[in-house]
Every structure is written in structure tokens, then in C-alpha cells.
Image 1: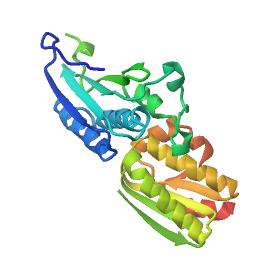
Image 2 (image 1 turned 90 degrees about the vertical axis):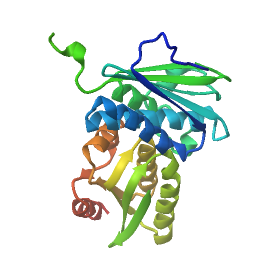
Image 3 (image 1 turned 180 degrees about the vertical axis):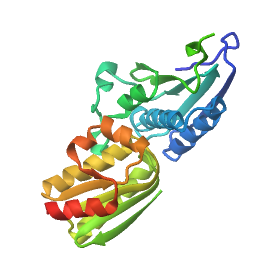
Image 4 (image 1 turned 60 degrees about the vertical axis):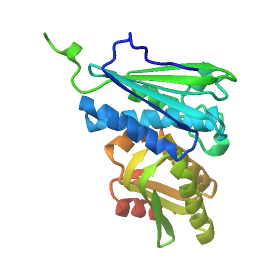
Length: 156
Length: 115
């Protein structure tokens, strides 16, 4: 699963992060994305929502994708106007049935006391959440959110 | 992330600090479990006053303890929930199963009344 922002795609700014699937990196990932998004001058609430959604996606990659074994998690975060687009991808186990995985309270790991709310939180906190996955190859989550003053909503 | 536990008349009070995510939740869970088991407590108050960040791992922690205390016919309450936490807790249905109070004092009074 590889996705790269091609130079022909209009983005104003972007970052890429790649790190091993260690739970220590969950906090690094959400803080790094939030620091980058801060240039759009989001509200504290919007920033918390983005941090939470990123934390859910990275946690899923580590515990479900790689099942706590070693692997690489890649994040790309790009901004255009007031919209932030974040992709979080892994080369892990993948998801057999995406519609089942997206159901609130569904978890494949009740043994780990997972609440099954991760995807619902991503859907609720972001404007858009897309999930692509192929079993045995990996999963890519795309999160999109418009923050602060959206110019398209302003009268010209 | 750290966790501060204290006992108030047979009620275990757990004050959570810092970030509550998948990485930090494992050690918090084992500390809370250890305190509950060692003291044989049937009442638990969890305070979120010093929580800076929480994701769905925190929901798992709360509902896991709720299940356990329910099996023991115990009592549990949450307190000092900030607005960003409130959103996640409401979304997950935590407010439908657990009482939530603005202060630790009120949460303590509630669980003592239930026992």
C-alpha cells in the first residue's frame, strides 16, 4: 500500500512520517500531525478531534494491522486552503470485512479490552473517513477535515 | 502518564494524569486492578481532572472496570470530565451506564450511597 502526493497534485504543504509499529510512537504521531496542522489556525476543539482520530488510526495499525509484531506505519499529512488530509497506512493483516469493522462497538480484540469505538470516533471527528484494505497486504485510512474559516463558506 | 490511587472509606479513588491512549492504558489498567484486588474494594471513583488527552483506549478502560464492578455488585462513578472527553464518552454510551459528577466529592457521595 503506497500513496504519495504527486507534485502535480495541488497541495500547499505536506509532511511524511514513517515509524515502527511501537505503541510509544502513538503519542509522537498525533502530536506531530497536530503541530503541522496548527499552521491552519484550528480551534483547540478541532485540533483535539484530529489528534484523537490520528491516535485511533495509528493504534489500529499497531494492534490490528501488525498484531503487535514489527512493521512500519506511514503517515502523510497534506494541507490545501483550510482542509487537511491525513493518510495512515500499514502493510499488516488488513481487514476482511470493512463494513463489519466500521460498525460501532465492533472489535476483533475484546480480549484487549478494546471498545470498538475507534472507527466511529474517526468518522465523527473528521469530515470524511475512507478505508481501503486488502487482507494480507495492509490498510490505508484517509481522514479529511476542513478547519478554521472555510473560505468556500464565506460570501465572496 | 501516571495514576494516583487513594482510598476514602472503602472507596478506591483513581486520579488519572496525562495522556490516556493504547500505550499508557496497559500499565494504568494493571495498577487499578492491583489496587482493587489487594484492598478487596467494591467501589471505584475515576477522576479525569488531570487528563490532557484520551482516545477510545480510555473507553475500554472505563467499560472494563464497569463490567468487573458490576459482576462484584459494586459501585462506580466518574468525575471531572472536560468537554473534549465528554464528547467521546457520550458517543460511546458511557453516560448511559455510569453516573458522571462534576466533582470527586459528589462522585464519592454517590458510590457510598449505592453500596
